[in-house]
Length: 306
Image (cartoon, rainbow, N blue to C red):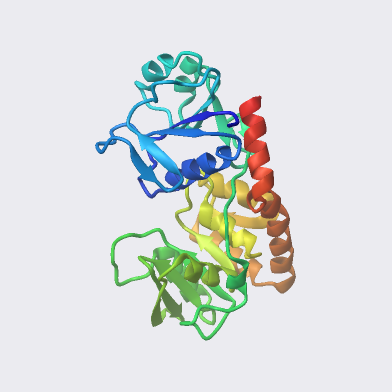
């Protein structure tokens, strides 16, 4: 049967980046043995969800010494975890140092150079390499500046960053992705809109861009940044975005804090030699850390064994 693992998730059903992370971790540990997934507040009792049966409370029999993985350690979880007789080490993805200190847990580190200590695992971030074979059907050109805005509400004007770029670089095609649409801007004029109907559509846009500017990268792994790097597309990210900045600092991209710095970064990536160097650095960095499933599974197993 292998070694059992307990997973306590407050974000399993949230559809967020943390949800993606905890599901991926659960999939990795399932290779070493049974996984018991507990989702507090689950109203339907035990419910099947893909490869796992979700439970609202801990199973009646907890294997002695089974490690526990938590996506977010919340106040009150300590009492529930304290009732797990014979449980093993505790690992948390998102938590405060204070809470970790009270439980004796360890933080799982998914991004290099993190200020938080812990086992550096990376993650498995899948992409379809065939997306690099054909560009998005709605665009008749490549080598554009791709901007992931992170905005969720419909607006008639582009994000300020896109407006500045299309004004400062009037010959550049700027493609803004938000709300499942890609809007093309050039010379401050809106040139058209195409749908982004699937993850493969987004990957095609990433793969054929000259650079990917992520204005709202995820806090845990900055998933879209990693996907861009796996296609060899350099990234430009806000300097205060910790996970994304760690990727950029690996040599795979650039950072900005002001509009002037953003324009300068895009201009620098426009140099073919500079872009080629960033592209190669991104692949060298991202492939072993996020594009190697067997290595990720092995690192997770090693971390849980201690």
